[in-house]
Image (cartoon, rainbow, N blue to C red):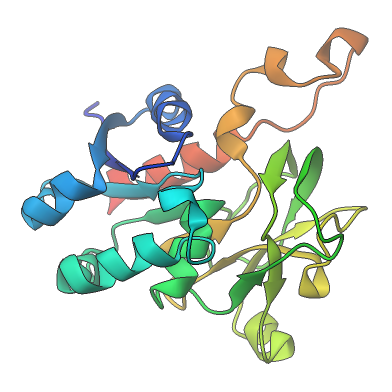
Length: 236
């Protein structure tokens, strides 16, 4: 069976692109790490791929706010190609800084603000899938993975409407680490093909990566989220 081709987008300051590529490869895709500058010079790269993942990190050192400079580059460089990519049902995933980029670019609703604690946080969290619209989380069991961000508090002017539309895809389970409205950890677009989340499922794709694995803990792998996206790309 052929492997769907996946474009893993990186920018100066991002640091999770190789982790994402590894997760996609395990999930059955054929990933290619591409710098934003390369995509800007050749927007047709989007046409040649079946999936897109915007990797996490600190793009451009978040100098103008989390993901702002990256999203501006996307909007002014490949906006038409990006919207066409989504319009034909190709799955898009934004993780952490990538989530911030997708909200700033208008591909996902809401915004990400400073953590309620007022400082950067790095810890493991449990994520509960909700709703059924997102192709990345439909039928997914709860997963555990690390988060690492200073601006991850999700805000939206009408959370009730967002929930009614089925666009709340993931919630923090048992502990809301950053004060996100309604404990929202991830949201999707109205079509369900675009997903953004703050935690890092790409850092729990092997059981041994869990910090309590040696104590017998067998928690949900983040790998399963990537497998859902790959399956959708293969079947569309």
